[in-house]
Image (cartoon, rainbow over all chains, first blue to last red; front, side):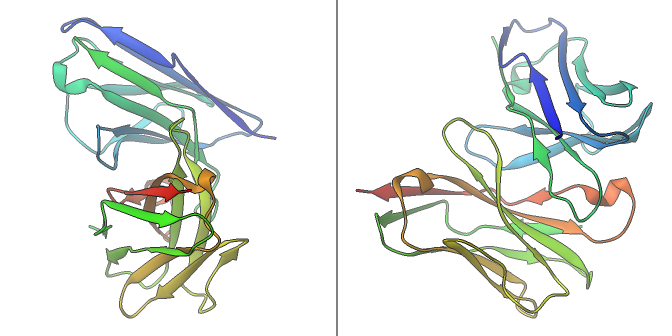
Length: 112
Length: 118
């Protein structure tokens, strides 16, 4: 069966510090991968998606970047965090257009 | 671009009663998928139910059912015999049926917070 792992679960970082959130999928190959952000009391906003190794598409221009160094690994990064980067970050994957998105457990990021 | 609107920020229901959560969407496409996800306090996103736009029959999963009105672009979720464990944020989501990874992304509404009263 397929599983998705996302870490860390919680992170508190000062403004201006770097960020690295990691997501890995097991039990499948060539998944479509996604990073979503959920601000307090709001819906999910798509940040990045990837259809293959090294292929990253950005939905919202911002202070964040994403990379996919391996088939089942998806990384969300920032060189310098802003207060506005605080939120709940969710990684997700899907096999195809019919299958639902499967989500990781999320990372709660607080920028102080 | 597709948009998904959930007009009810909060809803409440008595245990064992029925509640309906509303969702409307805007699209120019004829083929697409619709989903309802549940996010309990743990914040894990859990798929509740999905509907293919080309199917006229409304999807059903145990106590959960949808009322899909394609012409009206409406996709409501009905929860029957509500249980305390149903308390959560519920998100409606849209996906294009076009092929390609970029179109596999989900567009979400802002959510409806459901409270179940004992």
